[in-house]
Structure formats: structure tokens, C-alpha cells
Length: 349
Length: 173
Image: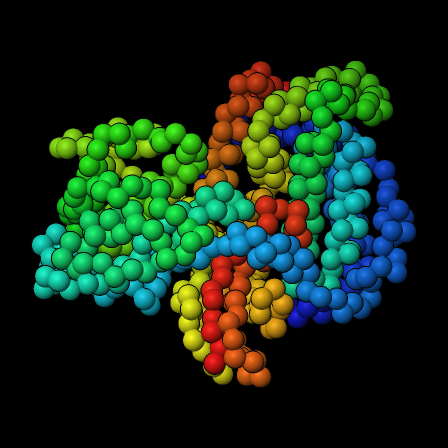
């Protein structure tokens, strides 16, 4: 914790005092009476894994999410190759986007594009990879972010043609991205859009342009030549850093397999998640019938999203179309907001 | 992470957690719901819920964290279900034995009222941070929110309490 302010110390004492003379009655016997002989006493009852109770509903309503997160300390393997860097000047060893594209005209690169989707914690960002023109990668990525995503569960919060230019000035995280809006009407939050969704919509642009430029520099929005004070009602007078991934991104995101992947034998799965105890439960469904289930273990959880990877054994399954579903673990057993879920259609040969 | 349920069974876990944490968890819940009887019910139910789900816990070392999470979630639900009129029910008097005790009770009402006026998340973060002394990471895990959100709820809650409890915070006596 940070240094203690005197106020904090006094609040601590005041709260202590407030409840110090509350002496709760002894309820141990009552608890024993209610738990004796119940499941969980002594040995582990062989029940179905508890987390599927809430998952069924989530899958049935297809309130499901996909995408991927650009993380602080790891580069997703599907990221585009780093852009060439002016020698000797970069302070960010990973990357420096070049405002003068070096790729031949007409070439395209894979870019991570962030879209908005619904989760138990409200709107969040989901990433899809799309091919965009290498020649103007920043603007091309933003334009892609205004197009319909591949996954119908996601949506773009921006109309086509929202941006006239995008650039980057500086080196690494010392630089600043600029995004120039095509139309002053984008200053106001559209009717029917919640403030939460507007905030996430602006984050979609920040995450997308940072992914395209491959450095997490701040972003300044412009209208014509001047910074604009708000975008969709979100204050933008100063350059904006990306929001905390745990507040902005879906907490589980499949990277592989891609939607509609054909597989046999063994299905390789990877993605990122922040899930209780680093456990990422998965199941394979045929229609609504579970045919396989298990869990992956991520490299960590809580403070950010961590990579997970593993395989799903497909041997013995009849050929056909299946759904792979991964989710965050939900230790509250439905008492919390509920799990984040991501799904992919998989065709077994 | 130790193997599932390697050393504790559910009965033992409940007994040990009860011995060590019953009083503190009831007091935590009382800070959230302002009522000792309700807090006892909530925490008792939470112990039963922990017992029921014991086999599903992959890491028994986290049992206390899990129990705390159940208590906070159920306290929040209880507040919502209780309704407006009952929110003004006073904390039951607990054996005021002296003038000092009476004074303390007056102060307690003021503190509980101030907590009641905070948004749910701020109240929970303040209680977990300043009553239980949990770290930001543990609070984030308990409430299922980011550490950044913990920081912001904490600073807003503290600022609001400074306004509503000004004299009490300035004069700890």
C-alpha cells in the first residue's frame, strides 16, 4: 500500500471502534447442523463441475464474445511483424511506427482491430485480426474498426468515414498518436449510446491505433487542425493513454482456433484470460450437448490478462460442426456478475 | 496450488475458519449492512455456502478469500433486498455499559450512516481496505474489479467520508 495519510489512519481506527463492541452470537452449532451430511463433507462428491450451471444459459443466448487482447508484457504471435525502426533513436525496443510507410503500395498486413461487445460487466473490447493496407496502417486499421466485424456478436461503434487521417509523432511511448475526425458531430455522444459504451468506443480507437503502431503512446484527437475537447462526450482535451485492460477488455479471449477452423486429432487452443485461480474452463459442444470438457491453466490472473494454451483431443468424435467455448472461472457460483465467455465454431473432419 | 482438497475437508475448513474469522467477518458485514442480526445471518449462510462448494474449490488455501467474497456479495444483495424503509432501522443496542459506551454508540451511528450513503463499491472498498486491511490486489480479487478501480473507489470513498465525518476524522480522541 502507499504511504498512510493521517486521515486513513483515523478512518481505520474509527471503523475499528464502530464494530469493536459488536459481539456476534455463536452460530457454529447452527452451521454444523446445516452442513452435516451434505455434499462436501468428508469426501468430494462426484458431481458435475459446478461452473457449467451458469454456462449453459450463456451459450444458449449466444451472449458470447471473441477477440483478443493486446497485453502489456507479451506480444501475440499473430501480431504483424515490427515495422522497421530508424536506427539508433528508438527508446522503445519493440517498435517505432514509421510515418513514412516503407512497404510497397498495395501490400497488406494483419492488424488487430478492436470492436465492442457485451459482457457481464457491460460493453468491453474484443479483437479480431484483419488484413489492412500496409501503406497507411494506422488509418487503415481505424477504417477497419468502422467496418462490421467478422463475429456477429461484436459491433463497431463508429460510422464509416469517421476519420480523415492518423499519424504518429515521436519515438516509442514518448510519441503521440493523432487521430483526425472527419466530422464535428462525432464530438457528441450519439442518441441511444450509453456513456459506458462511448467510453469503450473511444478505447477501441486507442487500442486499435496502438496495435497498428505497435507502441502504447498516448492518443490526441483532432478536428481539422485543432485538438477537440471531447469525442462521443468523452473528454479528450489532453492526449489519452489506454484504459486499464481489466476495465476495458473482455477477460477471456481466444486467439486460436480461428472461427470455422477445420481440425482432426487434436485442436490447438490459445488465448488470454484473467480468470479466478488462473483456471480457464473449456468445453466442446455438439449443438447444446457437451462432448468434451476440461480446463486450461493461464500463466497468472488478477492483475492483467495472461496467456493460456493447450489442446483438445478430438479423437473418436464423429465428423461435424462443434462449438469450442472457453470462459472465465466464477468462484462466486453465480453470485457475481457471471463469467466472460468466448466461442469458436470448429469443424471436425 | 496444492492438489484439490489435499489436506482439509469441508468440515475441518469450516471449523477452523469459523474459529479464526467468524467475529471479524460478522463485523465486516455489519459495516456493510448496518445491522448485527442481518450480518450474523449473512455470514452464517456464507459458511454453509462455502461448505457446499468445498469440492469445487481448486485451491483450499484460498478458502478465506472465497468466504470473504461470498460475505461481501451477500451483504450487497441483502442491502438491495431490504428496501428503503428498513434501511433506517437502527443498529441494535449492544450493552452500553457506561457513558463512554453511549458516546461510542452515537459515533457508531454517524459512521454507519456515512458508510450507508456511499455507493456500494466505495463502501465495500473502504471496509475491505480500512477495516480488514486488505491489499489492493486482494480487494480487486474479492470484488472482481481492477486494481485501478479499487484505487479510484478508495480515494472517492475516503474523500466522501472526510466530508461527512469531518470532525470525527479530525479529532480521533
